[in-house]
Length: 225
Image: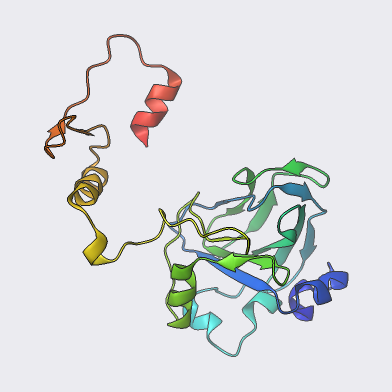
């Protein structure tokens, strides 16, 4: 922890000892903007200069301390429910720079943009104080088996100990998948997101009614999702 936080936030080393750590690795083809994880007030972003080692899984499992050696930007967020959360944006091979689009003192809200990486893949680390964060079961189970979990923007990754986990984002077991789930997945895969279930519950899909006027920006955005 001391090496990870370096001389940027040495006073927070003891704060995060024994806490929770989430590692979110971005492949080159992934979406490279990152977002505010919790509501709160943003502290001062501080950069620690370093190397540009690759952050692929094989490098992480090696003896090399990639997160402690690579260039990184530390962004603290002081929140009501999670205490201080440290967002660490780790540079890597082919990543020219990290751009933070918010500033110290901003009141920030979950899901708002925090910044982006310029070109290539890289990694976001989230540090939580002890007892402030419980990661969702699917992440914990996969991590125990040294497996990565695909996480999309807006999906739940954890919760405070006093709240239950958000299960709709989690993968269902095969025996719990319904025919409606299968049809919904088929529509997403084929791109027919506008198809609707029939009102009589027969399972047949109906084409949406045609637009009779020029679509609004919201309508076009929804159709493109």
